[in-house]
Length: 247
Image (cartoon, rainbow, N blue to C red; front, side):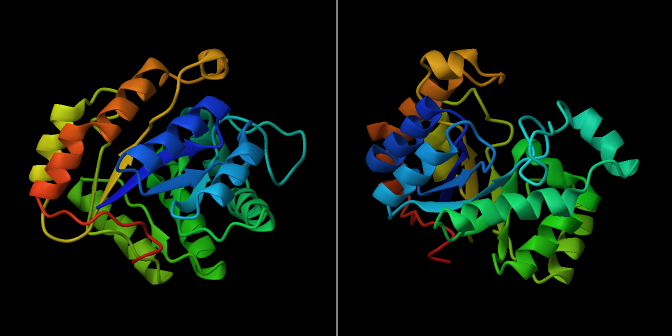
């Protein structure tokens, strides 16, 4: 199981919670926001914690562009969709600039995913899969359980040589799981490799002022990810914790 904490680089208190989840809990991996307010803090913490796998959390909604200085990205998924289909948003250019910023910071990304799962839009996934091939970052998250859409997304990813975990979970649990829920999930894991998405963090002044619905819930997720009950479920189920780097 890969336990990936999204939103690394969002705020310093989110970063602190992710590192705590790695050091004391089951978090094995995280994805870094190149346009996050705490990007530099995230880079520093990644260097101090080399056992933590670090990928790219590609952002098309919220914050400023990495490709065009001073330009704001769409504020909502709906605005992004309009921009993509009206060709007002250069998806590949923006995401490639974000990857370059992470590489220039000295981090070799292990995998790719997107903020707010925007690569469920086929044009965005096309860009992500192209980045996967051109930057040689083979692993891409496919967060979908709808068979017809899943097959379409898999075809796009496979055409570019992208790889993905056998299973993905955590979408419906975001912001509302505890140690018991996590224990049940771990004990019921299917055979193969599963990525669990999570959003741990410390909720102090920075996060309280940030534009996100996930605030106090990050503290609850952190508590669950570090609980003895969770560690016990891992041991009793013979689950191997890995990052994409090990795959």
